[in-house]
Amino acid sequence: MTTIQQKQDIRKLNVDQIKSWMTEHGEKAFRAKQIYEWIWKKSAHSFDEMTNLSLATRQLMNEHFVIHSLDVAKKQHSNDGTIKSAFKLFDGNLVEGVLIPAADRMTACVSSQVGCSLTCKFCATGYMDRKRNLEAGEIYDQVVAIAQQAEKTFNAPLTNIVYMGMGEPLLNYANVLQSIEYITSPEGLNMSPKRITVSTAGIAKMIKKLADDEVRFRLALSLHAANDEKRNQIMPINESNSLDNLAEALNYFYKKTGNRITFEYIVFNNFNDTLQDAKELWEFCKRVPARVNIIEYNPIAEADFKNTEADRLDKFAAFLEDRGVSVHVRRSRGKDIDAACGQLANKETN
Image (cartoon, rainbow, N blue to C red):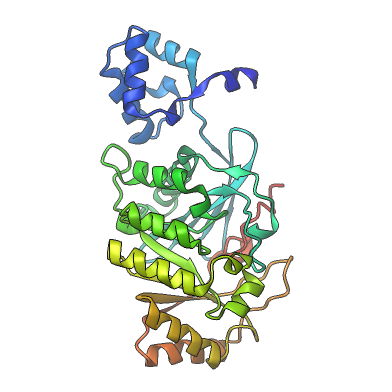
C-alpha cells in the first residue's frame, strides 16, 4: 500500500503535463498523446496494455505512476434485466452503479460520491456518511464498466448516462464536470452531452455555476414537493436553498444553456400525492420551463414512506397533463435487488 501512495495516479494529469514529464525523463513528447489515448479512449487500466509503447517506457511508467481503476466487487441481476454493480475503489471503498435496459435505450446510473452528506429522508444513501468524493476517473470507470455490461448482456451500446446514483453531483463539481469531459470528448468516449443528465437535490449557487460554465448536458432537479414546508421535512437542503432561490437559479440556467430542466417527483402515499400537491407542482412548472418525471417510491428499511396508490398517481399525473405539463411516469426498475431510485447503499457488500 505504501508503494501505491508514493506513485501518482497518471489520470490526474492532463496531456500537457504528461508530455512535460515524458520529455524530462528522456522520452519522446508524442508518447504523451499515445498514453492519454490509452487511458481515456481505450480505457486502459494498466501500462502493460499500452502495446505501442516500448517495454522500457512501460517499465518507467510503472515505476512512477499508477492507474487507480475500480473493480466490480459484486454484480446482481434483477428479474426485469436491471444490473446493479458494487464497484470497489482502490482504497477499499464501495459505490454502486446500475445498468437500466429498455427497448429503446441502455442507461447507466452512476455515483459521484462515496455516501452522501445531504440526509434526504427517503433515500438510503442519505443515511450513510459521506466518506469522500469520487475522482473523475472513478466516475468514468463506472460508465465504461456498465457500457461493457450492456454490450455483453444485451448486445447493445450504452446510450444514456444519469448522475443519479450515490452522492450529490454538485458537491463534487470539478470531478463531475471533468468526468463528463472525458466521456464526451473526441479524445475520450465521444458520447453526446445531450445523452447525459446530472441530477441535483438543489444547490442554487452551483446551478448558476453550471450555467456560467455553459454546460451542454441535461439537468434534473430532485423536487419531490413544490412547497417549502413539505420539502424541508424530507430534504433538509431546502432550508438553505428555498424553492424561490431554486426557481431563480433554474431560470438562469435555462436562459444561459437553452436546456429545459426535468423535475423528478417521487409520490409518497398521503404526503405529496394529493391534487393540491399537483396544483402546487403545476404552479412551480409555470415558473420554470420543465418536464416532470413522476417516480414510484421504492421503500427502504430506514424510512416509513410508502408508494402512493395507483389511482392517486394516475389522477396526479392527469391533473398536470390536462394543464399542459409534459409528464412521464417512470416505473421502478431493479426493486428486487435494491437497485431502484433511492435504494443504493452498498447493503449487500458492507
